[in-house]
Length: 159
Image (cartoon, rainbow, N blue to C red; front, side, top):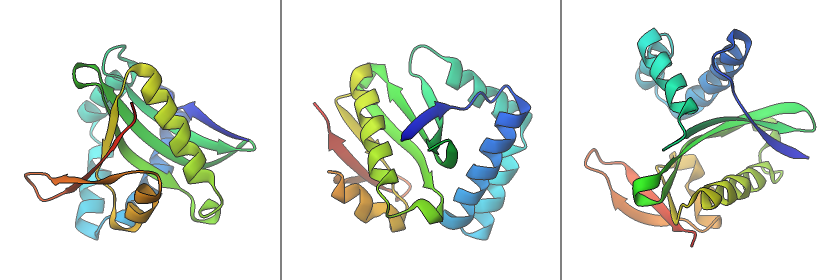
């Protein structure tokens, strides 16, 4: 059984768990300079307070979720919803290596899509890391546009 359990980043042990998972994710998807910048941000108390505040908002919520399979944490996913444009956005998605290609990622994606749709999202956007593009294409995403800073944005309509 796969579950999504929200991190409570106000608790130190939950913050530590998030930090460990997120730093593992960053190691895989970032070069050394980008990795260090992100790790530095995780040590910035002001940014952390803002992130925690975002997770507590009722409007335009930000979800930071632990992926749990059979009571074992196997990854994380962070996503958000923007009410004013009915847009869901997947920010970070990490499944530990030993659980990849087992259906965990697809099951989690379907859960997130259903949740975003229940909030009112009519489409989802994301900027996939190169190694995940095929996964998103298999799940119905297509290249939409290039951002002003050169990132490839993918989109899926979920009406």
